[in-house]
Image 1: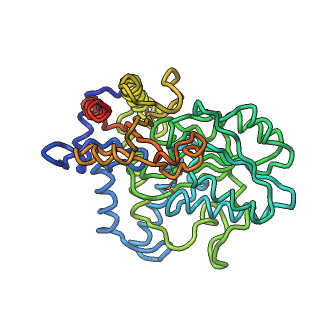
Image 2: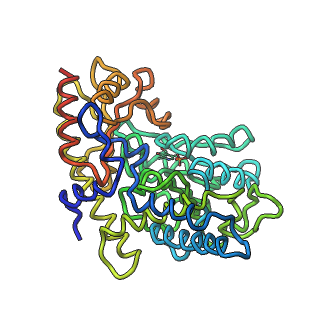
Image 3: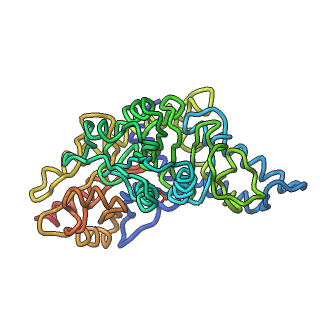
Length: 409
Ligand SMILES: Cc1ncc(COP(=O)(O)O)c(C=O)c1O
């Protein structure tokens, strides 16, 4: 089933926030890489959980039983979204960053002197800082180089992953440049040396079909607020692995997967909302199973977004004074996220002007501190980032292009 411009226009009615206006015009939400809007189905699911069964888990009474069932179902739905069998490998937490710190603390306790971990120069700080921290504990941290074209240096990846490597933390897609990394190669290289592979799929998850079983990483993280859900984080761990990790947890806590790394009482209604976001996305696909509908919907929504972003990428690059960063759109393996700079204007100034007109775009580094530094853009205030989501219209893109032409002139 193709997701067309008409489907995109229609789906807007499902998102209450899209009706908000500013200065007499609808807001143009081009800020998806920092978080998407939420459909009514997600809002209703969360409201229903609070209204009908607000209780803690594992009690002997109906509302608690309902929460237990809802959480089990939530993990199963998220497993379908990621493309893995069963929810018992899906741990949940406050957000990706918090889960990744918990993971890095657990992994740290398994390391021996001389062990190495590898991160990349392209990643968001959430997938760097928790691992860079290990350098202070005496371990070696290596960084895979980012080339000026916005791609990771393949030869450097091959050189940095070696016999002492214990874990490689790599992003699937860059939230600053939209690059999709060769995580399949990282898997091949880590497997050769017996190292763990941890993939940050936060920027990848909203735009591409995730086939986690096919990739077979050891750890895989994403965040529901980037795919039309609430603010929660998701951690997949390869079956059998979490049980071997010395995680931070209360002695009384369940020591098995997926609970072993989940501390405290979780935000159960929000987590149900994350599953509702997956159901909402899947409603645009066809197939007998939820997984089939997810695959169908995500691939067609991704193709729609790619087309719109490719158009923006081509047109914005024609504006005199604009420099477009990162790779082009000749491949489908490119997230619909485009970053630019405009000569003589800081990204902050441009974003502020656009914001006054109700065009929501981000300026700065978006915690992708290192790639912005490597590209020499830190002192210039980073970049101006535009993201395309399922509800983005060609008219939103034209409105942005018009405003940028005016600003650049
Ligand atoms: C690529 C990437 N990784 C990690 C994160 C951190 O996610 P969270 O806000 O869930 O901690 C973000 C957030 O913007 C991101 O874009």
